[in-house]
Image (cartoon, rainbow, N blue to C red):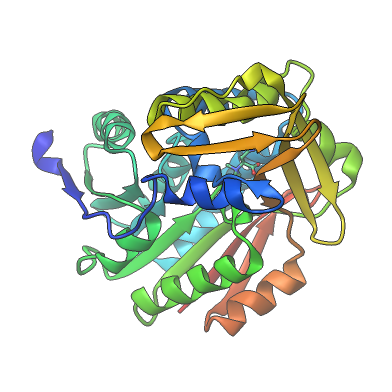
Length: 323
Ligand code: AVJ
């Protein structure tokens, strides 16, 4: 099986996770933290738990769309190498691999993820279930991975960015990523983008304020992770989880509110900062999209819009476009 698994570790060309971005965020006013620090081992497990919550509709809605649309997508594009930004749980890519198994004899999957161990674990499970599959994983950030795509192993590529992870990026960062994706793909290649759509706050807010408090634990875990990574002394329980919908920016905003005045040290970064009572840290934005504006953004980056596949309630969309 190992001859069907190839992992390339890419050089880290950015300052990500070296802590400078943490210092930058915590010295700004208002304070913020980069969202990708959520995802240490514990944070990834908590996110998996979030995906199972009754209030968190995005994962199961996107899976439902894929169940009905994967066959049509494979028919539309024909044989493709599947590239995926952020591999995470493999349930979505399985639906696509099963659909592409009907249009090509051999399957090629190229996940790009910062976690080599997550990549390897999910790759082994996929290889066991798809005997015609080869996996060429890239261990690195999305940006670096995209710049290091080797020549495709199938006539075309389908680059998948699922789960509305794009929603963590500001409009400007989002446009830059669309342009990069358009530039590194070839004429005729495809881009499949999963996005959470604008909807009533009675649906949106509970998804980020679940009754069991899993999202609150996920939010506080970012402080546990910083303690571990940078010898910090955050007291995560001294910060309260808060998620609101900002209708102007059309995004969920997650905060950790300091419950009293406190000073925190990150020894490994030689950094200290003070929080006032009730002072918030912005830990995540999760943008919600409207398809007209999204189509304009993708078209502006050079893509040809093909179709949006949605669920009956129009809660989530899978957008297919072509270079
Ligand atoms: C993985 C970024 C899509 O924004 O809904 C879930 C992360 N944060 N609950 C999202 C998340 C709080 C999730 N994304």
